[in-house]
Length: 407
Image (cartoon, rainbow, N blue to C red; front, side, top):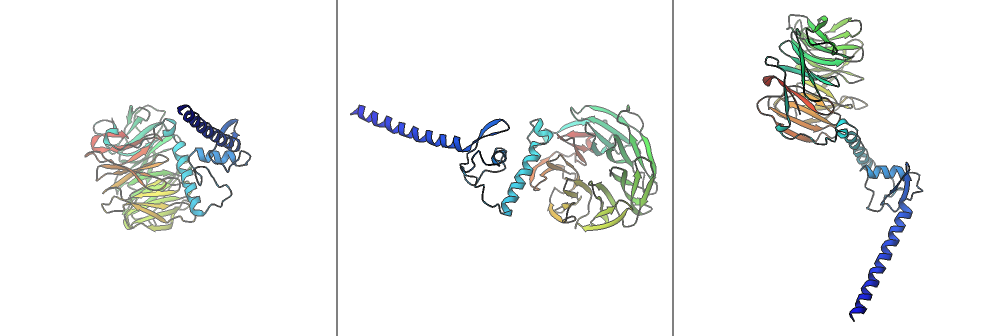
């Protein structure tokens, strides 16, 4: 009796094995193909290897862009509604940004979530960092005590300080040089200083000696340097300086209190804080061609490749505006975010946007594609004021600590 039962069980197991083998054989026969010389298997029984799009579907599946319509079907002949297409496109963009940046290469997938991730670099007592820029290898800090400091991005080594940059404020890396604005007060012409990174630390060189007074920030359009000047004889202005010839022009019409200026590759934008205006400028003549009322006073500008991020040092909610910068929706306010009680400087690493909450002594990090909050970190009493990214890490300035910190 026991032997008969054993035979019956063995027969049942054998039958199940035969069925399983048949199913596996069917899948292998129907859904195994060669892509780029590699044999791969798909779980979709409706995508045979003879399908001309077999390898494209396989790539979309393996990279996480699609999961099919069921665990075993892809439904290749079905139409894709626009709402589903939005999901496909969003996942594609997110995947490309994650897998295509320096952090992926270095296997640094994390987003810092605690102040313990800060690595301060002391740039010397008396140096008060105001604005930061990365030239691709090093971090440069324009300091309010008339100096400019340099730190190596790879390891945070302090490399030296340049002197003589009276009124140092905004800073930009352009055409192999470092340019710094000199804000000497409302009753004096503004200056632009220049540093050759190949030189040893020493005095800066004056590149332009007479632009609109009180230049705060600076940008570059490929030919000209542009500065936003808080005051020029009691009226705000912007200045244009040809980087090759040094020929300059200053424009006052339409500007009240311009603090920041940014070139996005196609448009010139100015954050004019007097009447809550973001302004688009014609770079050929410096005239205002578009005004966007943000409802809050704009302070700093950042471009993420599609949208402008505009911070407002305001303690009211929704103090960061996101504005479409390109296409038919240009000028449309897409969202308003809250980044503490005093957001100022910002940085973009290709995937995430960091915002310095200066008055709240904290840092906010948002996902650039959908504006979701990824991290909010309190960093003590040393308020972060400006930021930049080297493509791998964020860097923030902390004037009261006389340091810039890798985050």
